Image 1 (cartoon, helix red, strand yellow):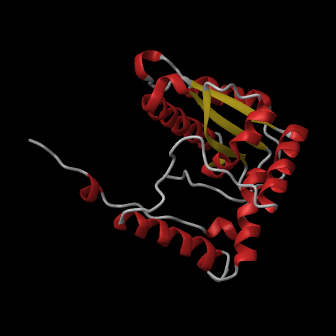
Image 2 (cartoon, one colour):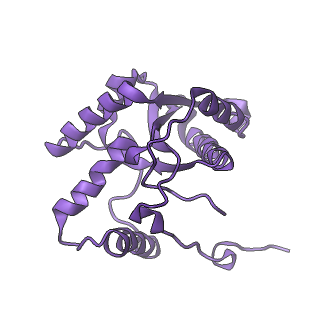
Length: 215
């Protein structure tokens, strides 16, 4: 109930031992025939800074590329589009006070994605292509375990699909092999409770809206 996607972090370090323990426990997640098709790249310090600088340079010159697999549709169906719109208005207009036509301000906020929102630890989760769609399901289970285990330790996280738009840069910096695809980035650290972004909250649909009981 306290897990949220946090977009502002304190400059407070997280030890390698804590990250390793979270990943060790997350690896207990279920996977198809125990194939465990995930891989995690952990970035801190200079390695994270160098990746961020390259991503910012590419973003600022309009170098965004298509993801290397179909992550989301070009056009969303109505009920899903409505949820995305509500989230966007809550984030940009209500919390950040950014007008929909203020593209520069929206760009400045979007740019923060590639610094992992200031978190001291950035993770990039990848999955073996040979596992096909099933591997993405497995990676999702692993991802959920990571974010819940971090929360159990008093930290917060933010899964970030934005990194997929620059997968060639990820491949170069992290030496991701061709048989792996990036799933997402993950910011990890201690939330800055004084930042205005800490006011961001998202609702959830009631159980009755997405569940069918068969007796």
